[in-house]
Length: 130
Image (tube, rainbow, N blue to C red; front, side, top):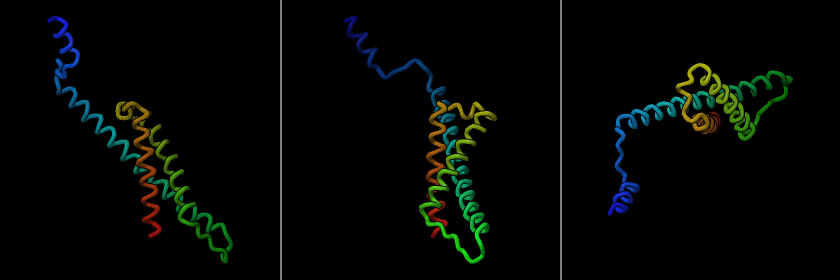
């Protein structure tokens, strides 16, 4: 009989810990991920702005009769790489200025930032070319 009770206790889903702390932790974690995603979107937007600015600077450096018209793929690649760089720098700046916000198992917060940056860069570049 005693072994039956220990077996039930091992596979029971009931806990003695209050759920209020778990809810608060989940809410705080969600807010941190949302902040990381917002910074990733900002990094992606800045990457697109840098890529378009680079294309404008190249056009200004060319002689007046030459036209620089990059295709969508080179501009997308440039925007994504610039967005990833800016997002990484924003992550470093965020960790330095507000460490409690970016302490979401540090690699996961960075992953959220980089993925949202790539999606923002790609979408904004496609909208720019439409």
